[in-house]
Length: 597
Image 1: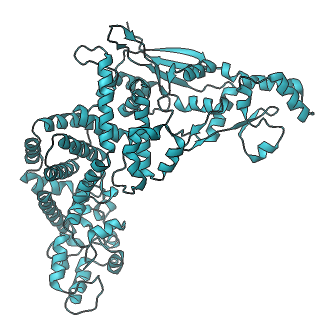
Image 2: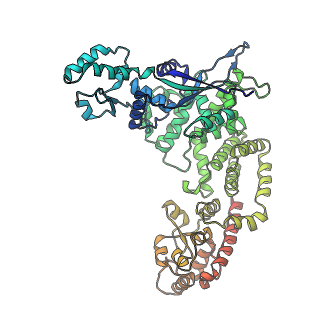
Image 3: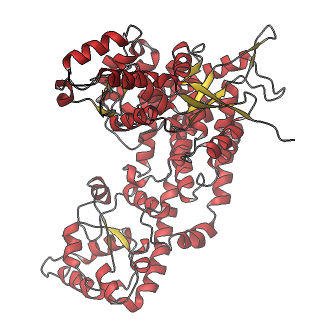
């Protein structure tokens, strides 16, 4: 016999709203931006009015926590799907303000034409038209008198049928008596099962992440300040992207500005560095990994619920300690000194632009490692080298691309025992001579310009202060900072004319950072054409390609850009050989770069 893992019931909308207002159902995302636009709210209300199905909302009863006296505390229902629909109801029917994508408070006002039975987003024209009910929230106010309203409305619109107006407004008012489906998941379900059920039930197929559940769990716990912690995470992420949000926040949430969290993040108001703009998932992952020495966010949900992994009971003391520990981790994450020093370390490894960092998880673990090593009171210089090497190793080997949580979990536990030994053992295993000489050149046999190998190569050029291709003074760092493009050593148009496909001419081994004017001057010439002209300018000829004037300068530029010898004699027939040789040179450069970290 199968086990019923959830119950399905139909409840009047009024009941759902009452539960929310009384706290019986907690909306974990209520302080996050409302993403529906006003037109979608209008359409939702119209569907309710016409009796169309509007889907289910899904709630998960918190696990029952065992209190100190041995009794169990029944938890609130967490609304894990349906927040937008419920918020739309509260905004349109109850006149509640929502917080939009810019974290600004505003009202969504829906108007109703009781003759045409039509809904519209209220605007200036509607507000001047006496035939429209300008805000349907008026109809749902506790002090609303239907008969008085009908008399007043018909006095302004004498040509309308009073009975018809009465019927249509009464139908509108009855929206709150319409039923909406509530799928309630059992309290004893683990987080993985809840995720699976959500995916299977939800008609949109939206996958909730473990971080979403963790944020829901945090938000509904007011006993240990989870609701404030949730705000801190959201506000930090938003201000990191939009520093100007600081002024809005001061007006938006005056109570929050009195908290320690606000003091910890206030520095962001003057911060425009976008190298590491975290999401709430990033913040949770780093704080949890560092403080709990675990990597699986489902464990965080369990711990915040008070889960004792040994007895499998839920205990209040574990929940309290978990909230306190997570709070400390979030404060460490937001700390100005910690954050800026970490970003400085990443920059010092040559990663000077966010476009060079394609693995957010590599960045996240590097920050968790930084905070962990600080807790262990490792020397700052050693911390910097540790973090640089681990970050680059992680990027090169795509360490956190497959099963990041499992890898986080394993790595942080290993670093907790003997950091130096684990780092060296991993380098020896992952970055052996065979890696540098064979595997890395093979990795670079790709046409994906955002590949980890190419980004690390650019970082190496930045670290070594290399000049751009055929540039005398302009560095690779300058070109990246100016959002310069990569260009082709064997010009794309030249190779296309020779019959090569995109996957061939766009090989990363054919890429260099170059000034656009140099690239334009090269045009579609083969290397054996334009390099001979460059040699002529190095022997007193007219400057055609950059400012290099001597063979010594040319040789140095070719070396720093890993250009194979003999390039001056190469045409398309030698292109394959060129790629193989340049991949080897690029790999050796990355190897030298790694040893510098």
